[in-house]
Length: 127
Image (tube, rainbow, N blue to C red; front, side):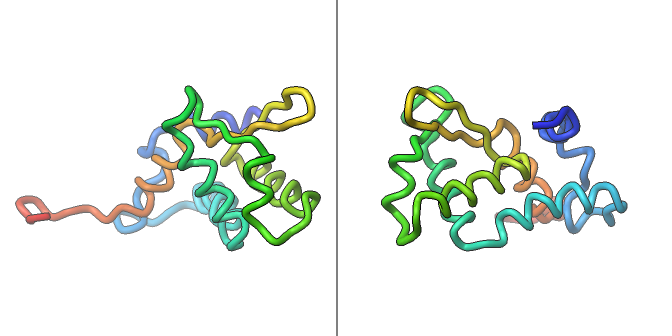
């Protein structure tokens, strides 16, 4: 992962205003588009969901590729390709341990996407 991607992940939501709060500039739109492009495929969206939902089990919320592959009617190389695209977009990272690879969601990614998509509530508005 490049330093640029790591810096992007570490930024707080103030760097990118919410969708309804202010227009994005060209750089912000290009950065966020990488995330949404990667998540725009149903297989990658399911993979991301499976990885992100593992937050309870281990310290980083890791999941082994051996647990991901059986959930799909796709070949292992196809699943690996989708995981690679999620990594390149800066959404997940991985580590090889022996013959298996473990994946986790990078810190702050889901918060950043959530902050971008959240709509501001009017003062005094009920839930």
